[in-house]
Length: 296
Image (spheres, one colour):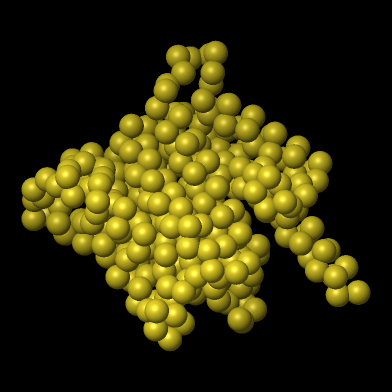
C-alpha cells in the first residue's frame, strides 16, 4: 500500500461528493417508486461490480467467495442491504439534511459498540466524546421542545445498523480478506433484495431509467474511489473527510429539493461531527501507541 495522505484526502473528498449525489438520486427515485425496487436494481449493478473487483483481486470468483465464516458474511450482506433500504426511506420521510445529520452519529456508535462486539477497550476520553456526540443528536431532535417526529428514529436506526455492519466487517477481516468480504456484501445483498424487491416492481419512465442508470454508476464509482482511497492512505487518516458527505448532501437537499437547514440541526450536526472526528483521531492515536508497544 502507498502512503500518500494528501492523495487519500482528495480521493475521500471525491468519494463523499459522489455518495452525496447518489443519495440525492435515491431520494428522487424513492419519492416516485417503491424503495425496495430502487435498492434491488441498484444492487444488481453493485453485485456485478463487486464480483468483478473481488475476483480480480483474488484470482477467481471461487477464491473470492471462499470464506471461513459464511454465516457472518451472509449476515453482514443482509444487514447492509437492510440499512440501505432504511436510509433511503429516511431520505423520503425526513429529507437529506436531517437524515444525514442524524446518521453522522454512526462513528460514535462504532466506538460505543466496539467493546461488546470486538472486545476493544474504550477509554474515558472517547466515552466523553460519545456522550457529547449524542447530546448533539438530542439538539437535532429537540425532544421536549417540539413535537418529536417518529420519523427521526429511521435514520438513527440506519446509523445503528451501519455501525454494527462496520464492526462486523472488522471482525470478519480477522479471518477473511477484504475482497472476500466485499464479494459477500454485494452478492448476498443482491440475492436478498431480489427475493423481496421483485414483488414491488413498478413501471418506470424513460427519464427515471436514466436516473436509475446514473444511480448505479455513481454507486460503483463511489466504491471504486473508496477502494483506491484505502490503497493510498491509512483509513484512520482519511476517515474524518468522509464527513463531507453531510456537507454535500445538505447542499443538494437545500438547492435541489428545497429543504431547509434549521438552526438546531446545524448546531447539533457540528457537535456530532466534532465529537466523531475527535473519536476517530483518538482511536488512531490509541492504535498507534498499541502498535509501538507491540513492536518494542
